[in-house]
Image 1 (cartoon, rainbow, N blue to C red):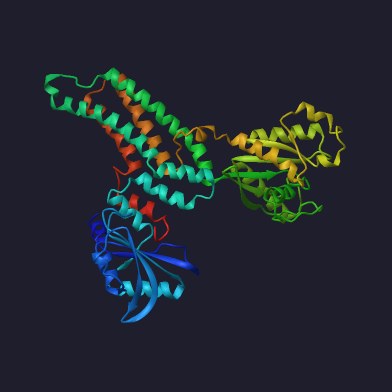
Image 2 (image 1 turned 135 degrees about the vertical axis):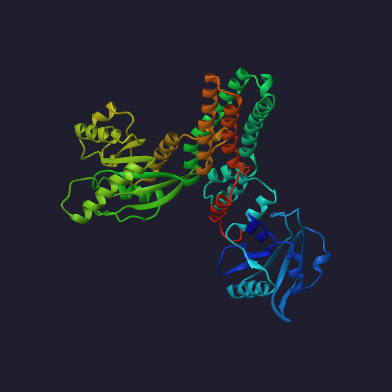
Length: 460
């Protein structure tokens, strides 16, 4: 912890924009000496005399030689992103210019920032809690409307407020029980056990809903792994190409063309679906194809959703029923899709389709047939709870802490039923408070913080 405190007195620098050539690049400097050290190399107004949240044009020079014309934005602590003095230097996006500017600051004793160090300082300086800090990384990584909305809600404190309310209610009872311990010789009871039991039941229901929301949250954050499976020549690669509207996979009438899986993502109404085209399912003596078939089964077992595609011209009702039975054994949501219906004249589809109304008839090569399939995909994912504005858990660390909290609350209920003494009851409540506190950062360790912020990009 001492090393961490010493590190936070440093002034740090990093590139805040993406690396590579561009019109503009932004260097971020944060720390107690950020404004003073920038002023040492800046020619223009005296930055130390300027107001916060102002922008100034000038040049940055190294021993009199101009490196670049820049715009310098000033943010004085504590009213800045990190809570410290922050300077953002907008320069031309040349790799050489960026390198020269960084070297110039390093010569003045500025340190290059570690991954996520700006956001870590913001957390340590109380600008937001740990759950909100993690949402910053999620917001940067968001590549769909739903992921963006979930990250924005968390960053603005929606999830944190709910956790804080839960902790506050528990803290009240914990303090009452702790007070009882001070008067243990007088056999008094400040905390009504029946009221505590009612509260724990209420909190358990809320946490149970939050835990259950993680399934949806994981879909929102990481996309839906969707395997396209079926026998050779069912049209799997054609379906992938049509969904993506590009020639992603090789299409051939030769069975076994796809030997390995091909993967790409498509956003459907704000939800990311990771479609995986796989090798055709069949017995084969071709060693390479057999490996591909084995990988298909492995992908199917790990998928969140399976599109099972079959050629309606080549599949009997008995064979289809056998395939459906095998699918159901996986216990993974699936959509049975009858392909190549375009080869039938209108009204001439096999009669057995009437016995299986859940089967979706399509022509994989037709864009017109993709809309019903997309609608079915969204129906199965079912994001009603997200659309109604309920809090959604998207972070696996938060999920684990909630599960641990639920276990601790269950221990509290058992302790009440068994009539245990106040000291053991207080221990179980403190355990629940500890796990809730891990989510927002009331309870942290250096290792936890290092693990969280190491996953951020440098410059954020």
